[in-house]
Image 1 (tube, rainbow, N blue to C red):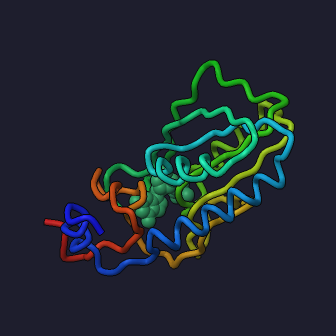
Image 2 (image 1 turned 45 degrees about the vertical axis):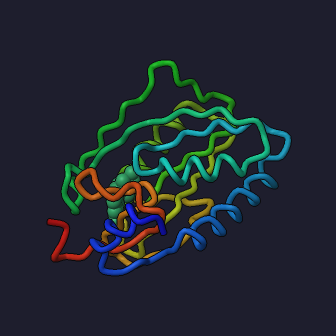
Length: 185
Ligand code: 5GP
Ligand code: MG
């Protein structure tokens, strides 16, 4: 692990998923999509910023032509509990009618974010819609979200790293971990 990263890892209580585990699973997810979307153009709708690394790694494993649209959605306002309200910056020119859409996000928690975005995508009548997340929390959802693939099922704990932040920090960790409750300072 590079030394700049080792310092940040001291803020973790424990590592949940190593970079090797993440990359192996993301490769499997890409292989499945390559089989399912062979011969089609994938229109990827990717949620930022948390999905940044997952989306970058997954897309590099895709073999079909890909169009990428990024959206920002927020239901967290700097804390570790959901506010129950989802804000989305939906691009005015995003037309998904007749497209094979692949919706990507870092983590499914309450389900609010993805259900709001799925409803908006479905209202545009795409040819197909697949929803894939890297992490799915084992918990009661506020909204049911049908997933086509989830990289890992995890316990209901707040995770950081591999794109996911706590108050703007820890996105650059190559692993995914649980924050040490006594840190960061
Ligand atoms: P939901 O709307 O499903 O409750 O939450 C989805 C969003 O909340 C995710 O896209 C992610 O940005 C954020 N989120 C949920 N759980 C966690 C977590 O454990 N860690 C971090 N960093 N973000 C989370
Ligand atoms: Mg997110």
